[in-house]
Image (cartoon, one colour):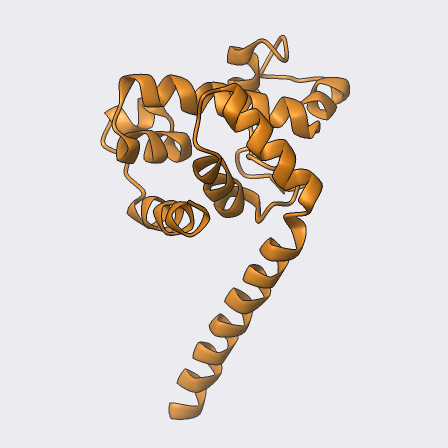
Length: 159
């Protein structure tokens, strides 16, 4: 029993270590500069955008979550991209529209636009959670305190 527990703990620790290394490697100087530029353009703290990017994708500009689906560095959904005006029909985006979402500049623009709008209307804690669960989900009582805690941790680290 003790061996099983140790193996599980070691396995989880190994996965976390790999994820942290991957996140550090993927934040290239070019990507860092782009994040800083886009954050300033949208009047946001770059540390907040970096924190979201680290949690959402580990700074992987090619990340894809098939469950949502969401795409790219900031894990943008077709619905959010449609709200921003990047794509026409969020229910059935074309291949070229998905490529537009993956474009790192577009991806950051949509994310920064959304975060900026959330920060205008809500507290930092609410905005962070709404980025993860959506405004409607948050209003319905959906909370992700682990997401909030992790984004805040990285926000403090990058600030």
